[in-house]
Length: 206
Image (cartoon, rainbow, N blue to C red):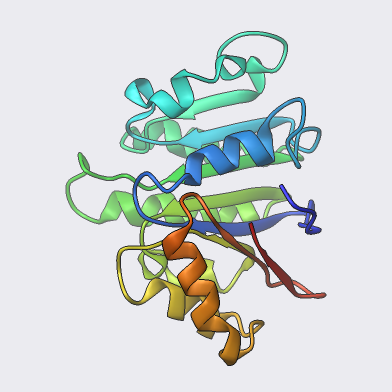
């Protein structure tokens, strides 16, 4: 991962891109990996909210999540289990907790559980904890959480609006550079646009 100073203090972030673009790999391998991840020594505990984690090969293939000295820090939660999710919200009050919400809601009926996950994310980001949300569309995240984000990782998106919405809401990139950035994301598999919205604002594409 190319150097870009990301915040370690309590914050929220959004990782956005289509299925298969490398969102989860980026979070696990470049940010949370216990040997070389950017945040490798930052969090005491990491809650991963994902309804498909039991059959998700991206998680299952990374053995350090399941065994070894670091495995106890990673706790997986199905967001459909609202009682356990509420308990996780309480536990996150401990310092240096971290939550990842991978919003794949194929098996969730209605929207109240989705709102609950986002509400928990907002609470975590305000309690000396960190909340990251992985989505396919940027505007799938509620505006309250988008306004709190300190950085965004944008991969190629299938919809027409996510790229524009990210750059419009976070006015860091000059208009004349946007077309070349969008082309790079579309042409290079797993390429990502990493935007730090907190001052001093900065961005890279890698």
